[in-house]
Image 1 (cartoon, rainbow, N blue to C red):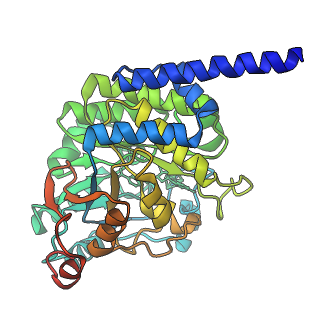
Image 2: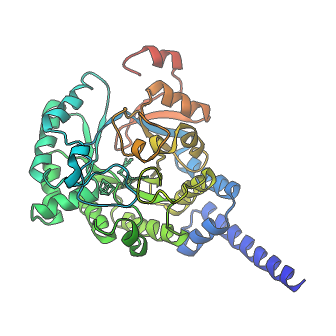
Image 3: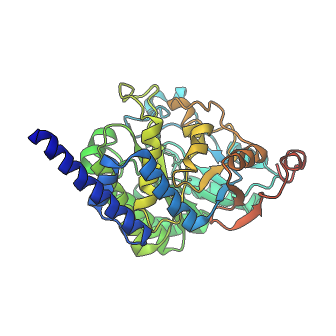
Length: 390
Ligand code: V47
Ligand code: SF4
């Protein structure tokens, strides 16, 4: 009896706390780390979903962005040994991997000649021989061929290695690579910032401070960047909150982040394959809490090649307002880790359909979220048959 009463008091206290958090969010007040933790621990899916959706609609209405991009993965040879990575091969085993020459990468760019693509996304392994001058040459060649293409490339992990090898400070290296043509920085390499987790899953690559410093430096140069969080492995809720707190603090300082991208850990063929993947319910909670916690991040993105199309569609009710791009079938980082999308590629018509089915408004954007075209009033048949639209 006493136990029952105690449980009921605790439950009531928690319900009151959740109500207070909801009131803060509705009043546009910032929630604390403690609040964030309680949302993960006690927030039901429907509670989190309705709050996150309210925030999303307050910020963006029904607008759901996508972009038209393609990916280049220069190599999967990597000096690091992240335990969750299914994609990389050590230099000693490089015959099992790939190493693209500048000519081969320019040939990939040329495949998109005449197509209304606005962005190239370049991310790969950290190759000991592909150095800063090599990538600056690549960037200059891409810009020479297609000056209007926005180049979003190289995670903070790749940049940190390149700059250190070139014996340059982060500021010097970033200035050099920006001048060579790098426009913005993708969000990868963040994983989980907390040292207790980082030491166990990716001990040898740049740590939280280094990752944040690289992004801060880019922001000071006027570049924008994204941030990711690899979730659903050994991390606990407080590690996720700590991760988002550090990002929120930097964003308060610089305002340079565009979008936050939670990345679901996939468990095929890596040293962490013994860990079960998170449930769809947990996935949706991560998106919702991210939308509620990161009040200064303008956008929340679901990366569909990794989540799958149907789950990506579902995230549109849990705070997400961006589902990345058309991509193409060349990206291997997720297919090798077990994603359902073995050759991820969606046409514009398919992306528009996916967004319209969720009763949202599909809008093509460029990397910096300038509107390229509003597709809400354009008929799917017209998109399918007009090569400029599809
Ligand atoms: O940092 C590696 C992740 C990231 C696995 O900024 C895995 O628009 C899940 O940077 N399961 C690199 N994730 C990808 C990246 C990215 C992706 C999409 C959009 C943007 C953007 C950036 O891929 C790595 C790591 O967190 N990753 N292995 C895995 N087994
Ligand atoms: Fe290398 Fe990136 Fe894979 Fe880590 S996640 S091993 S840095 S390719």
